Length: 357
Image 1 (cartoon, helix red, strand yellow):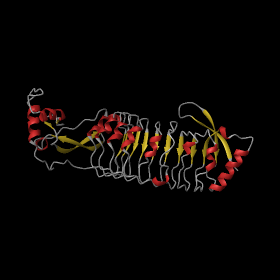
Image 2 (tube, helix red, strand yellow):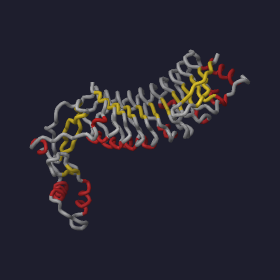
Image 3 (cartoon, rainbow, N blue to C red):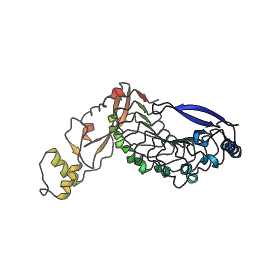
Image 4 (cartoon, rainbow, N blue to C red):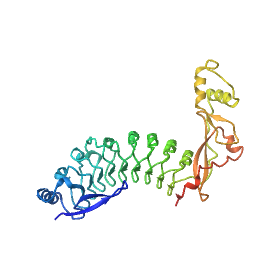
């Protein structure tokens, strides 16, 4: 017997009554479920057009029930915690806003090569499956806000991730990620970024462009430092760093290759504040001048281009925790000649929760 009850959704601040068809936790196999759905569809007292939410979680479904497509006004479908090994293109028949298919046996090969473009989809949850590649098919959902791909075997985040400009939550914890693409820094609407339980050794510096980021989960990775730009995340209130091999001392003995003649010439022009115009110096040198970086040591007026010295500096968050940030200096003398002053994080009091252990 099917169980039908009413619930409401207030995610946008409005109370909207939805009709829910709930078959969750009944231990149904695919044949039994399809029989129940047929019975529902044939009942003259009931209308498939009124059903907007169907819950099929925690059953024994090995195949996707084909007659789900009869519910043309379906908006939310939960097929989590079954034995599904193949996910069909349900969007061909239903313009869903939410699809939850976590804790199944889906692989990268068992997904459709493309999904029907679905502008209405807001949430996609594929946590706890067997995906080995980032599913490029999700770019058929241009207005996606919540994407959950944790607990899979994904090794790389697609460089096209920036196409999901409305994304607010990206959950990629518990995968095999060893790098984060710079394009992730273009997700200006992102509020939460979950990258815990991976193999990350570093983060791109443009993570500082995520101005709306409130939660950054990085625990249980291989991080030794963080980009100094992270202190510019003014809205960040939760940063989890525990179980990373974060360094516990300054690095002062590092290999420093000699600067090129081009770099030495460019440094001389910059340090002496020599005014030059195009044609006064070789074109290569003139173009090179635009790539100068100032030494982070406030006591030093030097600059550097391609040749730099890496230095680890511990930054104070909330007056309680000190985290190591990677800085670039123009010369090893900036370390041995005197202490480099602390970098002061912008509005560090906003960091209310720093988890280091």
